[in-house]
Picture 1: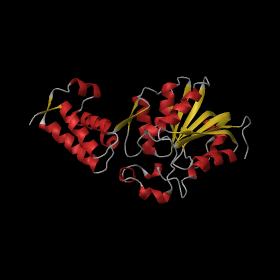
Picture 2: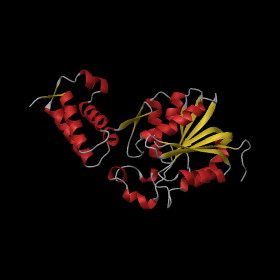
Picture 3: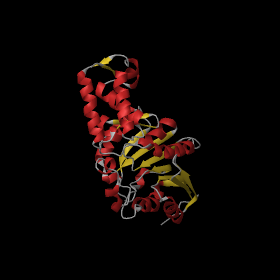
Picture 4: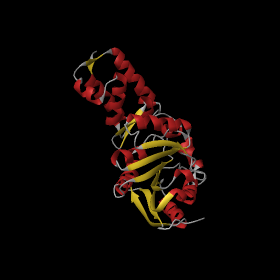
Length: 291
């Protein structure tokens, strides 16, 4: 039986909805685009054309992989964040819509600064820093990442989005002491590993079995990176500069207290679209604290 591209997409979307997938529309579209080798625009343009049996088979194969737990972003090798297309592999976390809150807050702040430097620490795919670089032309952004494979993805995403003049990847250990040669940053934004070690095995299999544990494991209580970064990385934050964190469920107050103990002031918490406290930020004192 012949089927059009549009019917193929609708059939896949219906199947995902029956299984209770929240993002069924997006996931069906991306899987069909990947299987057919078409862009979103081409899929719409060719919607009334008939798909070959080979295309149907490819769509079914991708669907089966997804139903076995593999996230769509890893299947198709890319995902979108803040309007940017990003290369994605299992070496980096898949960017989530909740993280766009951190990007939006940091972007609004950077726009008030004029010429400035920002650091995306624990950069992963580089999604946060690249969102900032794309929206704030006067910001020079460093993508700091520990894992060499993730750094490779950062480089690819810088090139893919034409941001080579405004973003640069640099190896960094967020749990260590920053190199003073880095210079000062007016803003640090960070989505660190924050899942307590004991909770990783309780995560949804699509996360537990596919996403890199290096980017998930935040230590026994999930706060190891927050402790290290608030204590050590203020050394490269300019006086009056701002530190933004994404936090896990139930961590906002604890992270705010850690920041306050290290000399950060005007600590604020913002909720994501689900009403969960998701971003904590504060300003370093006008005179940077010495150890």
